[in-house]
Amino acid sequence: QVQLVESGGGLVQAGGSLRLSCAASGRTFTTYAMGWFRQAPGKEREFVAATGGGIYYADSVKGRFIISRENAKNTVYLQMNSLKPEDTAVYYCAAKPGPFAGSSANYPYWGQGTQVTVSS
Image 1 (cartoon, helix red, strand yellow):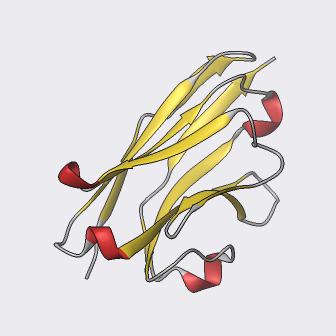
Image 2 (image 1 turned 180 degrees about the vertical axis):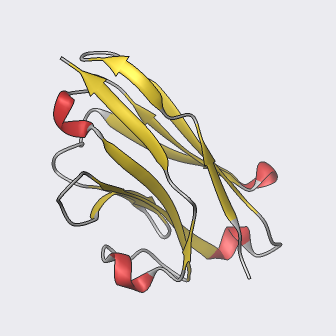
Image 3 (image 1 turned 90 degrees about the horizontal axis):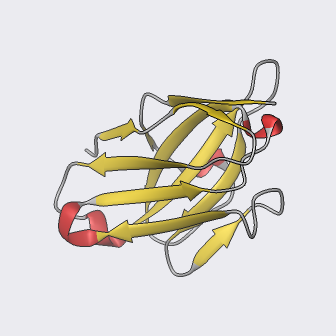
């Protein structure tokens, strides 16, 4: 069992930055792919970024967001720069055994989510 706890969300003006953190329990963190997804009101949950056998980004965030992981702390981060109002969503951390997958359906473990609001 893996438990995930996100932190770092908040309100920021367009063009600003935020860093999200996701702390994972368990001893097999290094063997898991870790992903960030987001869900805006009235929209489906969408892939943002992931690390696991490589680093992957959605086109909408490429060049602005950076995912990284610190295995010694069982933590994955999402550095979000040049934020836009359309980035407003609840951001979720997710984990799966094995390599990267882009579909949320492949991730059995989820955090509770953290709200990110970008004002124009």
